[in-house]
Image (cartoon, rainbow, N blue to C red; front, top):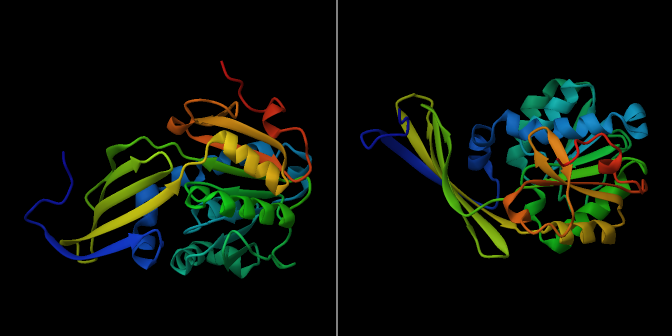
Length: 287
């Protein structure tokens, strides 16, 4: 059954969000991406990190580009102290609502700041793990990405880990979400340097009888594994590992892997640990 709004339904209003993550897009962010997709990579990294020396003594996580706080909420629910940084006050207002109990008892902290340059207070703690999931790092160009990595490495435990994921996107038109309350179609276009993602959807309003149409455009930078590994090294990281993401597993990936644009791949590195986390035997090997 097609649940998309039909021509006879009343559409009221329209908003456009262009690479800004302002209030209108923050309203539909959770409906668009969903909790499972937000926390999936965090669960993988938590399992790996918990088995390390730093993971056994330090339970402070820093989420760069925390958005509406879904991933940070999961970490707090699982015993971590969470720090969330995002440049969007609209996203952080929603994160604050989710994390209110943890904020009140000092288990979570939110900071509106640029991920390329930020400062943490003593009260926030020194993170053992720094995470960035979704498309956050792909919104940054190469210079901004290196600055972000360098800044994060200087704020975390020396034997901690920084982990991020890069999403592969093929040019296509796809139905992202479909329900009686929310509908979204996504089209992506790749020019070899950037990926432009155009989203258009409908959201049911409070009265239940009308829908509002919304649009969003994201421009993502294409960062090859080879280039990302170079940026991490230049930023001062050690023990850099790249892995192809396959469900709940990570498979070791060579930096010169030819078909990287079509996959989701993860990067895990440390300020000082020279042995890559992906070579410790805790990650499922490639068949």
